[in-house]
Length: 364
Image 1: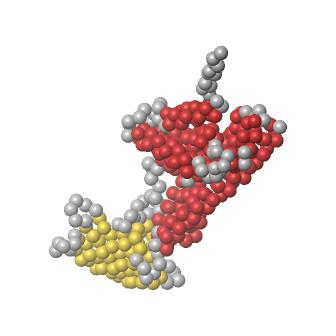
Image 2: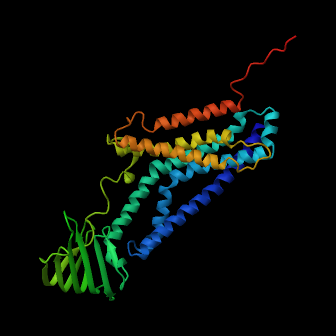
Image 3: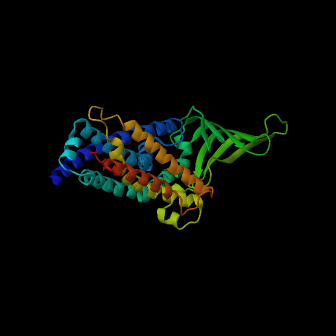
């Protein structure tokens, strides 16, 4: 009997989880595609990297998709059991919570192992790959622009326009505007040229080599403009490197654990929190997912989502507190998991009839 119950609940929960995960991944992929398609249309990323960047962004968001999918899958299955009176029949037949929990926790452990691998190992690699594509994008910045349309680079610091491009990828009738931030009004450099070609060094820094043009340099509103005519002139369009040394998302978990920096500690604790939260949410899904027999199976879903949002926000707030030094790393994000685990244990105990009320004696 327990084996039949295990197979039935495990199979139903696994199918429900797969459907929910597929929907959430599809939505995440759609959001990523819309974002990177917009970037490609603006000339900020090459068109052929859009699908890859969207897929990598899905990997980075699995730390949210996996826990919420496990919680919702178990809650929906428990809601169906309650609606169809199967939960009451199981309890009346002497089936304890241990037998009912076993398939849920087994599936949660398998998903937690997978999600932990993705969060701890695969996600940093995916971020490094996105950084590599970012560097490649910077290196191909000029090739990605559409002739006849303005494009911006380096967070809007550089504006670029070219009327046309020939078969040798040489640009014609080029306009470049570079803003140099400084105290007071920003200094601007405006360059016009008949032709331009791209040059890339080993650090992926992009330089436009312009020919036969004019350079205007000064502060708007002031008369001390410098005007220079040139035969050849180089303009840097991108920073030397697209990969920053302080990009903790791209660093391996082992490297972060060896660091004493608060941001590094917060980052590796957040990665480990993913499998922990999956297991804890699986524990708490059954007591908060139980509904009256005649109620709908979706009655408690909103409660579960709100609970997950609060849980996730407290984990992230704890990570920020570590970074700012308000919370010692020993306490870190662990206190949130301990509190939620304690809530789960209390709710499970109540489901099991604890604390039991003493029976009143009947007066003679």
